[in-house]
Length: 386
Ligand SMILES: C[S@@+](CC[C@H](N)C(=O)[O-])C[C@H]1O[C@@H](n2cnc3c(N)ncnc32)[C@H](O)[C@@H]1O
Image (cartoon, rainbow, N blue to C red; front, side, top):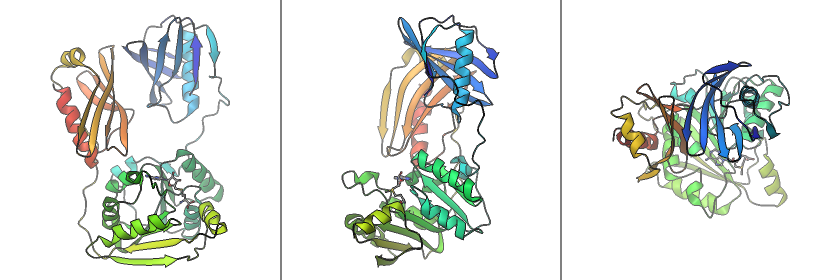
């Protein structure tokens, strides 16, 4: 994360603009300040930490902009305006070119905005190096291939490959697939591939496959659509088969050591070790009722800002399948900023709540009404209103 260390700051009056960056307002808590900054239409916080007699000034992690150069530029401009005497720094931009966004990479809001396509959809979960995903995209130019990964570097690597190969039918989303299912429309997907999921033998709650996931997969699959698990793990194979068998109507196929047209890095390794490879394929046989599109979570009104300021202490609320953690509060310039974590245990939202002019919003992005988020949001609204 770009940062610099200084032993002097001549705090500039806000707002001010410099070098294409706008420094808008500032909030303060014990020993640290957040400065709301805007560069190339992206808003993010710069964090000033008082480590007397020095200050560390850096980008704030949750609101990190899409390109590191925005942050570097903002820190350079702030250092100039505040006449900082820099002791050490890593804010010299390696290149001053703004990278164009890779069109294959999309945010989860794509699905929240009631995503529609006429194309047949193939979905790959945890695509890793992306060999299978790219193969599917190359060989099915008329289909849309959606890849979901929690590992950001894998998303970037696959996006680069799409660029090199000229693939225009790929969408890559950096998200947890266990929650993603809630965003997908019923009866909309032809195939779901889960190849070599992490077995998580010691932490089974982290597995992609669960009874809930299997039900959601059946809901989003078209009639005749398949969920295909490929694994080298005997335990995971038995686990997936057991879960699939729990459905009252199940069409299940099991294959042992079948060859696919394309072999992933993991598969190559297991084959060299002469391990058995299993496919467990679940076919959907039912049409499912349509689900409603997932919406953004909004706030309505606020009773008493002063009460929030007076009563704030870090607090943790837990409920059935969700939690809310109010971590810290910052105030200043007529605003309250509350750092929070909330939602599902397996995929928490880490967002700020900004209260300004009696308006309340999540920052840096919206939160969506997944089941866990909805319950957490109700707790947040009640708590804000005392
Ligand atoms: C063992 S690797 C297999 C990669 C690839 N499918 C292959 O066959 O080479 C498992 C992949 O799943 C991803 N993963 C794990 N949990 C996930 C989740 N909840 N949602 C999305 N991706 C996940 C990991 O980041 C990793 O890339």
